[in-house]
Amino acid sequence: MDGNDFLGEEVTSNVQRYEKMQRNKTKDYFDADAIEGIIDFYIQADKLKKAIEAIAFGQEMYPLNPAFWLKLAEIYVQMEKYEEALLELDKAELYEPFNPELFLLKGEVCLNQKNITEAEEYFEKALLHTDERLDMLFEIAYVFEDCDEYEKAIIYFKLIVKEEPELEQAYYELAHCFDLLEKFDQSLIYLNALIDIDPYNTGAWYNLGVTYGKMNQHQKAIDAFDYCLAIDEEYSVARFNKANALVELDRFEDAVLEYLAVIKIEGGDSISFCNLGGCYERLNHIALAREQYKKAAQLNPNLAEAWFGIGLTYEKDNLPKDALQHFKRAVLLEPENPEYLLVLAECEFRLGYIKDAEDIYARLTEMDPGMMEPWLDWSFVKFSEGYFDEAVELVLEALQYDDTCHQYHYRLVVYLYELGKTKEALKHLETGLTQHFADHLLMFEIAPKLIQIQEITDTIDSYRTQQNQLKP
Image (cartoon, rainbow, N blue to C red):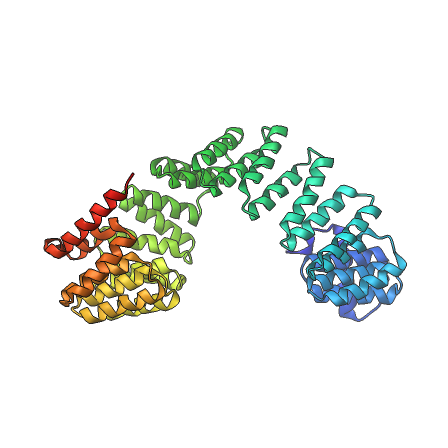
């Protein structure tokens, strides 16, 4: 971000004059405040090397000005050079022993060094010597927040609320900290408190909706977004999140209306078109879905979800070759996405590209050996190709990573029966029935003929009787 976004014309003019001086290798006069402004310009533009050079220039002109030691300490903190920062702060403290900014920085250094008690002592000194108590409370809270010490940050934000009950930002920060701690009920308390102070606060209603969404209370989220939209009907981010909440409730037709309204207000972006495509897809409006996904891909060719969505629409239209190319594009953009890889492998298999499918399954099982679907799908490929022993070996290998997965046992029943290994098959059937009785029907989806085998149906009936006896 350019320093002009933060600082005024006078600072910009000073920076230009300073840089001209450097280019010409001359020595111009700048007062100390002007040099501080130049340093701040570079810090805020994240040009720390130039900021350090400007500090050196300032120290050359004003060798005993502690402001430059403080600025250098601030940069060292950003660079995580904490010992160097403390040396600069100690020098500054000799000249300004009651400077609250100095104590704030010392506290920040201690906090980054995990010396929390010492940090709090410095923060208390900063509060003792400042004339701007509320500003300092915010600064301290932000330091704790930046160091992921959210519980500590909450203490200071609560102090602000206590001392200035109508200060909106403190309520947002409290809600944010509780949100990061996943204490969503506490977030709701402070957002509702802010709404009590200002019932027409769109930001508070919006954040309330977002928090309810994180709690999976989607209807309450929708209600909150509706309040927000009643105040400002063009608050498009609230409308967008309302649409997302409607999707979570499978209210796809209502979600479509909201996404279309967002697109009308904002002009349309790749995510909105992609989400709209997802709704049309769920409503089985495949042509409309494909149209939206294509708009999303055109706006953002790097959006894997859009290419994947296009592929799904072709797959639903039974055009697997067209689907395959789009699935490949999605995987190219997100090569570690297991959902995309699984669907691509299945498509490769359907088209008869067996080796390509198996290569993907091998990759998936290496990425996450505990993931069930690749092992089952890969073994099914082997089974379909008549390699029954290899199918069994794959599932047995999968069991080494997760021996509690009942689906592995049911799948082994299918494969082992095909090999004539009846006793082994029945052992796995019993294990599967013990672990998860209802899913035994999965066997019959793959091998319907098993339902005709007496010993299998007898074993299932025996476990069904046990299940019924256990019911109260």
